Every structure is written in C-alpha cells, then in structure tokens.
Amino acid sequence: MKGFSLWAFFVEGGWGMWSTLLFGVLAVGAAAWFARRPEPRRLAFTGAMWLTLVTVTAHATWTNVAAVCSYLEDPQRVPDAEITRTFFIGLKEASRPGALGGIFLTLVPILLGVGALRGRASD
Image (cartoon, helix red, strand yellow):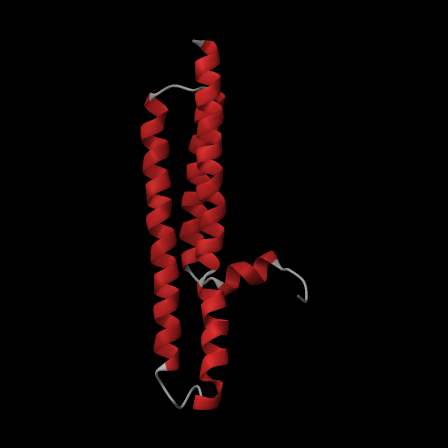
C-alpha cells in the first residue's frame, strides 16, 4: 500500500461522500448527546438519523456501482483486455461511501449503549 490519503479516499467515493459525512456526523452527534444526557425522547431523533445514514450510505454505494457499470459498457472507453482490472478499481472506489458510513454506523450504537448504561446508573 502506497500510503493513505483521507482526501483521496473521499474524492474516490464521489459526491455521495458528502451526504454520508453529513448524516454520519449528525447521527454520531445525536448519539453523543444521548450518551451525555440519556433521555428517552432523544432516541427518536438519533434513530431517525441512523436510518437516514443507512439509506444514504446504501444509495451512494449503489449509485457508484451503477456509474462503474455504465462506464464499462462502452468498449471505446475500456478495451476488453482491461475490463476486469478496471471493474475492480471501480468497485474499490464505489465502496468508499460504505466504508465511511460503516464507521459512523458502528459508533452510533456504541454511544447509545453508553447512554443506556448511564441511564441505568442514574435510576
């Protein structure tokens, strides 16, 4: 591996990375808010942001896969000898929103668990 560049990772993921980042930050922020002050009324917003993040992540990933397939269908752009390699490079880039969203989708339940434990301790 040559080295990791967060900006290159972000650019490879395409425009869907912006909505994934936005809703990821909102979902983690809402979960952190619940972890800090565990009130049941905060769970609805956190849950809605988490589900929105799932949807945005899936949509961005599938949109990227569709773009790769659309690119590959034209034999003028990709010769048959290079189609497999190009497909896997495109698939790598198409998976970027899923990787970014997965980080946020993991952090939210962890923070909700912390809030649940804190809520039990205060009862």
